[in-house]
Image (cartoon, rainbow, N blue to C red; front, side, top):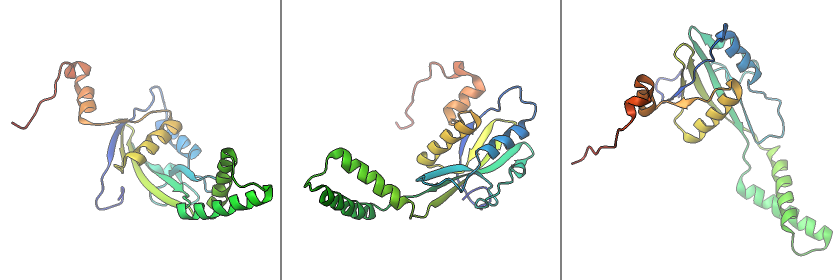
Length: 199
């Protein structure tokens, strides 16, 4: 579940707003607008973009409504098309047979096989409906902390990469070690060694 759910899990990241910005909210709105989810992109197996957590499937993202006090509230939407392996295998076999009959050969060169696979997969992708995934984001602009409502390592990787491409800031995971470093500096942790809590 996300921000609007009754229960949820989330991951925390450090993402400081660049110094010297006079209009932080305006900057966030512009970046979200530039990198908002686009329905019209064709031919891609995966599409990613920012959208509204309140109307994630609306073609119009009212980015100005994302700013709530010191927070920016938005969602990351990933639409992914996947061709079932059995379906790809079937149509690839048919295409290979057709090609061999046309060329009068009994075995396909590796390069030709690869190109046929890419062509068949692309053709099938156009017929498969994308499956959407919506993950909410709450960015405390004042404190520089991002709450990302997922704990999946794969999805977190997608988020970090897209956040970096959008805002040119790499969100750093907030774990006990980095939090302690942020409070006391690197000197606080220097010389520490692991300890066992089991005797």
